Structure formats: C-alpha cells, structure tokens
Image (tube, rainbow, N blue to C red; front, side, top):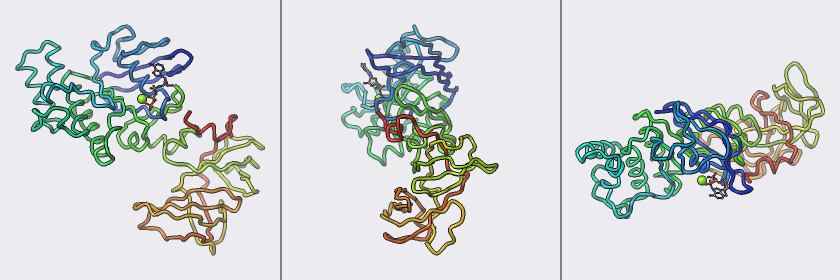
Length: 368
Ligand SMILES: Nc1ncnc2c1ncn2[C@@H]1O[C@H](COP(=O)(O)OP(=O)(O)OP(=O)(O)O)[C@@H](O)[C@H]1O
Ligand SMILES: [Mg+2]
C-alpha cells in the first residue's frame, strides 16, 4: 500500500544510460504503468525499485523509507515477470505457500493465506497442478497469487501478459487490476503495449531512451500530448508539416506543404516558425466532394479502404500529396470508396501544434 518515489535516479551499464535522471511519484494504491518502446529502460526502472540493482545516482523511497540500501526481500514487494517464473518442481499450492513458509509462518497460517489467494485468482481447483500442466494465463495468475501470498504491498509486474495470446491477455489484464484494487495494493506495470496501458492504468509514464517524457492519466496523454513522441506513441496521429503564417486572436494560421492553409486554436508559436501539426485519425471529418470547403478543409482522394470491424480506416491522399489516415466507426458513418474525391476537415481546437524537431520528424518518433 505504499507510495513510491524516485528522485533523480540514474542507472548506467557501461556507456549505456538505461535510466537517465528520472523523478517519479507513484501514489499509494495506484495502478501505474511504465510504457515505452523496447530498450527504453522500463525493466531497469522496475528492477531498481525492486532492489535487484542499485542506482548510480538518486534516491528511491518506498513509503517514507529510503530503500537504496535495503535488500529486495525487505522491501515488501511482489515481482511478476513476463516469463513464467514459477518453481517447476512444485505444484500450484507449494508455489503459493512458499513465501509465507519462508517468512516463518506455521503451516496453519500459510494454508489460510494459500487458500485465500488461490480463491482470489480463481484457481483453487487447480492447486495440485504443476506449472507444466497449466496454461500461460493460469501460470501468470499463480505468479500473482504467489506474490500476494508473500505479503506484497507493492506489486511490480514486468510485461506479465506478454507471452499470452490476445484473448487471455485482454481478460487477465482486467483481472490483475481488479485484484490490485481489491487488495488496495500499489502496482507498477511495465508494458510496451499502449492499448494495455490505457486500459488498466490510473496513470501512465511514457518513456523513451531512459527518460520519462510525460506522466498522466490515459485521457490526459491522449488529449494533451506534450510532445510529438507521446502524440505518436499513445493512440495514433497524423503529422502534417508546415510554417506559422499568422498569429491572430483566434489562434494560429498554418501553411502546410503545397500552400494549404489551416487554423488551430493554439497560440504558442511565432510567425515563420517551422511546425508539425498532429491530428488524430478519428478527429478528421470526411465529406463528399460536393460539400462547401469552408474552414480547415482540404481536398483529397481515398487511396485505400480497410474494414477493421468496429472501424473503417481510410488512407487519403491530400491535394498537397501528404498521405493521412482517417478512422470512422463502421456502423454509424457514411462509407467512401477507393478513388473517390473527398473533403477532409478538422476542428481547429482538436489539432496539436508542435515545434518542428531539430533532429527531424522521423528521428523524433523513432523508438531507438
Ligand atoms: N544488465 C545489463 N547490462 C548491460 N546493459 C543492460 C543491462 N540491462 C539493461 N541494459 C541496457 O539498458 C537499456 C534498457 O534496457 P531495459 O531492459 O530496461 O529496456 P526495456 O524498456 O525493459 O526493453 P524491453 O521492452 O525490450 O524489455 C538497453 O539498452 C539494454 O541493453
Ligand atoms: Mg523489459
């Protein structure tokens, strides 16, 4: 149930700075995710909190306690790994009561805890089964049960659903969140899957190259990305390049490539500045070419139509040759066909405006 605080934490492996001056506060009873591409330092950050490795700089607090010099077994944490880390020669029951027994609890107390947590992960009827007789999803539930039985107040999960197929993954993520919430635990969940992080987290930290770029609720990250990488990594964004033409009382007038002019309501840019406009695929409005053009309207041609079930995904070649993606609900919206001329619009307040990155747009959104 403790909160976790990192203050200016750095961890290097030789020349690699795996975690670079990270400060972070995970609140008591929060379900928190570390999200970012492969190699960004998520596992390293989790192992630092667990005490499996030591920081080169900075302090780590669990509750009020500075834990830099506290060994992992004295930190009251449970660790669940991506790979199934159960003892293979022990059945579910022995795996689960291992922690309480090591803690010195007598058999009666260990049994009470064992029954409780196995009920909680709904695997009580499989207590005789050995790990190789369980499915991947079941093994991870036993791994969670084992962490809970050991008395963990802080649950650290490193891609716990990574090895599971899509359907089990979707079910188990809600189950793990429910357990953490029922037991009022603090949970830190590492994933590179933004949909997973969005679905289960109270808040998310988006990481890139050892740094935290933004911390926020799923909604905040989606609605108000602070930078291009977050706009790219959370959900999907179309990036349109251009220059600031005018700053008015209503916002900013942008000239996109090919001389197309559009408006946004943000006002933080200077005239002449090179910018990137980020627009979500579902933010665009698609209309037949007969519509009046009006504000923020760009002509285009549908280049590809993909039926995705819930949504239809259109790739639209704009008049300035930029290719954008537009996503519309398949049940409620009018359909468009390949080759059809359309008008694409977006509300000025729904576009995010960023300064063009020094290193170039492609490098900025690259994971490495
Ligand atoms: N023990 C180690 N020795 C040397 N380098 C390491 C060690 N552990 C991690 N690194 C390096 O630190 C960086 C961060 O690695 P880390 O495992 O934390 O990334 P990650 O975000 O968990 O990636 P993934 O999503 O692939 O698991 C990488 O460049 C990695 O090669
Ligand atoms: Mg990792």
